[in-house]
Amino acid sequence: MHETARLGVAGLAILLAAGTTSACSSSGSASAPTTSGSSVALSATQYRAALHNINVTETKAQHAIQQAFGSPNTRTIAKAMSRFAADQKRIAMTIGRLHPPADAIAANHDLATAFAQNAAATRTLVPKIAASRNAAAAQQFLMNAKAPQRSGHQIDAALGILKGLGYTTGS
Image (cartoon, rainbow, N blue to C red; front, side, top):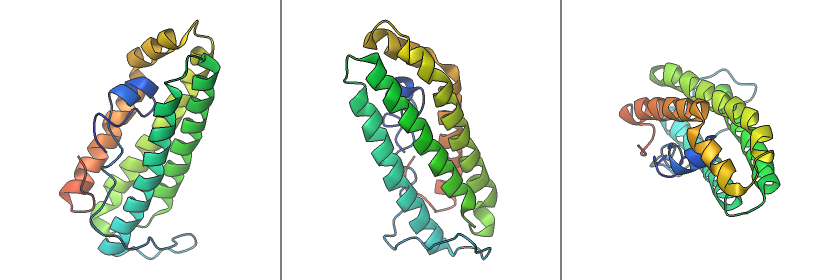
């Protein structure tokens, strides 16, 4: 997930500063297996495919939030941020349900935790965004929000480990 593409929760700060969109991408195009109810570790190929599918979901969430920042209406931005928080929570849960290969267990856990923290950080910003006097003030608020920036860095760190292990191709 590219640093310039991740706006994560700092919405715009994330939108303008963090980085998680293409790092979950993998070089394989196989479809991800269904892991619910199974405790068998995924093969490296299956895990790469699962991360790729998660990246597709994250990319859609990032595009939706980026589009919302074009709106002059703070309620529109706040609603989009609320949806983004829900997306981040779903992604965290999906990652958390994966059974990665043994060498990726810790990084997978860290990634799921970071996405959950990103969701929580985003949710806390929504009321303040909605109460902002205009879109520019909302964006400024987001640019200064520290929690989304921290979770964005944590996501990037976990993805960096997974990249080093050969499971992702992003930064």
